[in-house]
Amino acid sequence: MKIHYEYKTPEGKYIRLAQGDITEQNTDAIVNAANSHLQHGGGVAGAIVRNGGQIIQDESDKIGYVPVGKAAVTTGGKLPAKYVIHAVGPRWGEGDEDNKLISAVRSSLKLASEKGISTIALPAISAGIFGFPKERCSEILIRESSGYIKENPETSIREINICIFDDQTVKIFLKEFERQFGRRPDP
View 1 (cartoon, one colour):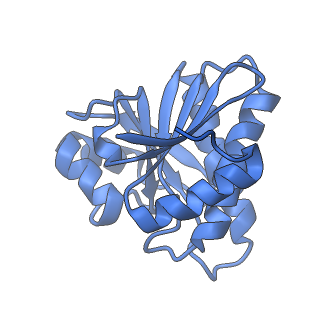
View 2 (cartoon, rainbow, N blue to C red):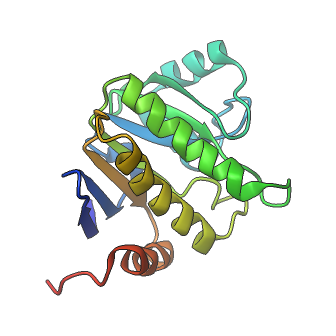
């Protein structure tokens, strides 16, 4: 995992832009960009089940359904992460997408906090096959992550790693990190 940007909040917590495979993140939890029926066939969700094992799909099947904007949790199976938080983001074009994505991010962080999780990795929820514009996604994920920490300074979460796989999306998120938190220091 490569860290492209690290921001220390006034509360002493960290929000980072990381590049790598979310299934390999050594965090307490990873967030899966899921569909409402928690069927993890393709994309990040498929990789999570392939790498973490059928137990993740079996536990998801027991949960059954999660509305758009909400999240549910399963174990991490064979993944380094103890938990997988399945966040259901909006499909682009369904209406009220920004607020639904905000709710999915907030629901994920709230669930992590309730579980006592201290480190979490978030993907670009809805910005893949769901078609949410990556620029808007980056603005919402970064703003809501820092906003959640500011509004909940007592949260168990001390590190939020926004984990992006590809170079193009990393560039989009890096630009937004610098817009929200200032230019990153030269290495």
